[in-house]
Amino acid sequence: MAGAPGLAASGGVAAARAAARSLVGALREDLPVREAAVTGVDGWGPLLGDDGGGARIGTAGLRAALRAHDGRGPDTVLLDAAAGLFGDLERLPTTVGRDGSPGLPVRLTSALGDPLEGARLPALDRATPHSSLVVRVRRTAANPPLPAPATPPASV
Image 1 (cartoon, rainbow, N blue to C red):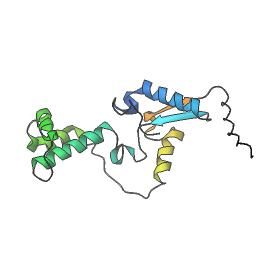
Image 2 (image 1 turned 90 degrees about the vertical axis):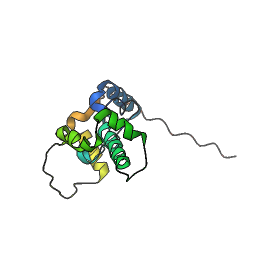
Image 3 (image 1 turned 135 degrees about the vertical axis):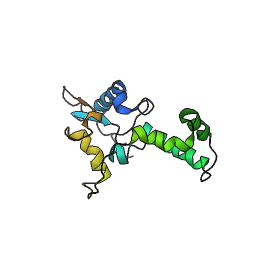
């Protein structure tokens, strides 16, 4: 499950472990499963995905500010906010690039599955690179009984 109220605003699952544990506990109580997991990655990983994450939202805001700055986009309050935070916007790429580039070489490969499988993998496989971003809660008691189906009304 990607995203939950209170998780995105506080820095995601990694920064809001208590909120994530509460959410996964509620899921485990409501679902007839032995283990439930909550993660902040959307199946595409932090470099290509994480669309609801703070870094992705911040980057989108800075791009909008730069488009407004050079006339390629509409005027936005983000322009003044970015200038107030970072100073001269002409130097913004250098300022952000100084600390933000992971410097990893990119190697394209064929997809190993669809996005749903990508979201499912970190929940099931504890050896994935993003395993530390998954909060798991295991049921210690038997699964709760499933609710009985509603009885249809009697024919008249």
